[in-house]
Length: 375
Image (cartoon, rainbow, N blue to C red; front, side, top):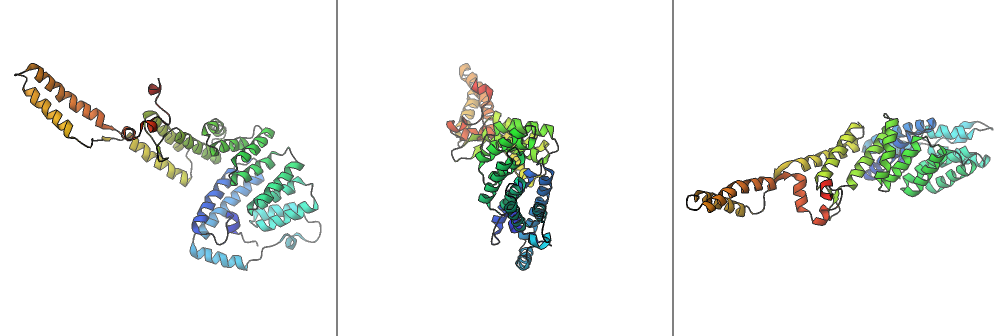
C-alpha cells in the first residue's frame, strides 16, 4: 500500500519548518477548496481527497512526535511503481495515473503519465493527467507544457484550460490564469465554475468591483456552494477595504459615516453567508470590533480644558451681573447654555469622528465620501 507523502501534498521540502508548512497548508486548502466546485466529478472527488490529505498533513507535520514517526516511515517506504502492479503487457496507464493520484502517490502517477504520453503522444487526456501529477510534484514548468499539449490536441476541452488556469493561480500569475479561465468560459459559457474563476482573478488584481456582480449571480444560482460563498465574502471584504480611507502609513481607517455604513453592511452580509472558515471568521470578528469602535460614542476631551472652564465660569459670573448690566447678563446666559451644548456636541462623538479629526485633510478625502459632502 502506498504511503501518502505529506510533503508532496503540501509541495514543501522534508526540511520545511513549521511556519513554511502552515503557509503551504493555507495555500493548498484555498486551491483544493476551489476545485471542490469543479464541474468534472472526477476532479471534485480528487479535491475532496486532497483536502483530507491536507488535513492529515496538518495533523501529522505540525506535531513533533508524529512528524518524527512519519519521517521514519517515509524513509523506510518504497513507493509502488506502476510496473509493479500493472501486470505484464497491455497496461492501462491512464487508469493507473488516476489510481495513483487518488492514493496520493504523485511520483508514481507522474511515472505512469510519462509512460502513457510516450506510448500515445497524441492522447490529450494522458497529457492532461501528466500535467496534474507534475503540478502536484511542484514541477510547474513541466505541468505548463503538458497542459499545453493537452490543449493543442483537444482545443475545445474547457477542463484543460481550467486546470492550466489553476496552475497559474498557484504561481500567482493572475493575468495568465484569467485568460485561461476566459477561454474555458467561452467554451462552456453556462459553467459557473469558470466564471467564478474569472471573478477570483479580478479580486486578485484588486478589482473586486468587477468580481462582485459575477459572484453575486453565482451564489444566487448555487446558494449551498461553499466555494462560491467564500469567494463572494473575500470580494465583499476587499471591495469595502478599497473604499476606506488610507492613512499616511498605508493602513486603512473608517473616517466618515459612508465608510461606517459600508463596513456595517459588509459584516452583516458576510455573516449571513454562514461560511465555516476559521480564518475568515477571525477576520470578520476583527472587522466587527473595528465597526463597534467606530460607532462607540465617547468623550474626546481636548488636551487643554482650561479655556472651556474659564469661559464657563466667566459666563456664570456674567449671568449673576444681569442686575448691573443687562447686556453682560444676557451674554452670560448665552455662554452658560452654549458652552456645554457646544462641548457635548463637539467632544462627545463616535469613534470615526475622533479618528477623522486626527487625520490630515488629504487622508480624510481618500476613500468613499458621504453623498451630502460630495453635493
